[in-house]
Length: 343
Image 1 (tube, rainbow, N blue to C red):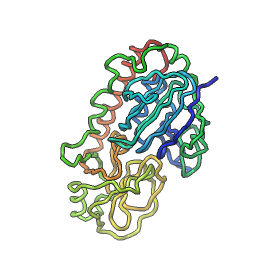
Image 2: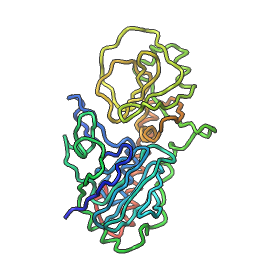
Image 3: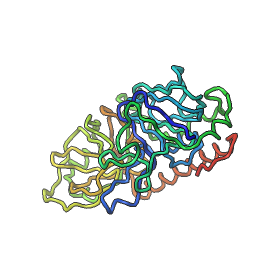
Image 4: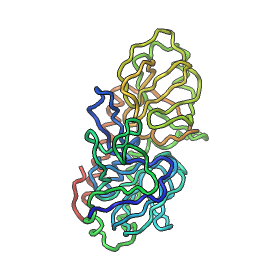
């Protein structure tokens, strides 16, 4: 029988997420998926799943979960002080857990979102090719909503993974499992300022030239603070308002995650994983794809700045990131006491 997780406490906003449902934007359906795709993929690698398997995304405050069968699991992303039967466990490493154990989390000490992968993945019913939860559309995950107390999460068969570890200590693993390669996490660290400002790399947007020179300068030079109203649809920013030199209304056009729109009032919004498919506000810039996982870990109150890169640089950075992921996947596969498909 497939293992399941029982929700004792749901946490602030815990959902089932995978790598999303691409290919439906023409029908007005967002791609969605994990906000921090790198953390999700690494959690799955450590739990011996395919990188795109469904896992749990925890936001700001984590849940309490009872494991109904022996399994292998991994926790990545934001630091939420995970415990197994009240005993602290490390993140970024595979954890063997016995049936009946309770996995619990606190508030995020740093970062915003953590990920929990279990061997076999979360086996929620797919919707349009993805198990990701879209709360606005009410599809994916568990009834298209965040977890609730008493939910039983079906999981794929992870018995082989747990059996391979047998009764080893909960975090028996090679020492190099302690963290992923530094280059995968390098852009997540603070810029060195005392306020802990996160730097996001951007390319200019289609309407960049329509903003006044003072607005363009302020956007690249000033700091912005993540507003409390931010969510999986968009990260709202508080800071210097940005004015355009053209007040004409734009026709609605396609937008994607990472697009930075400037609505009336001049305060930017960075569109996130669950963003709408079209918008009519001017676009001053786009956060590069490789930095979207960095954006995912920005909590309300955090400070951001932007730095411009070229499209060519953005592509090179993404290729370097994917190269590191391939190296990590190969290293885990070669050191594993068993063999599974980790592509």
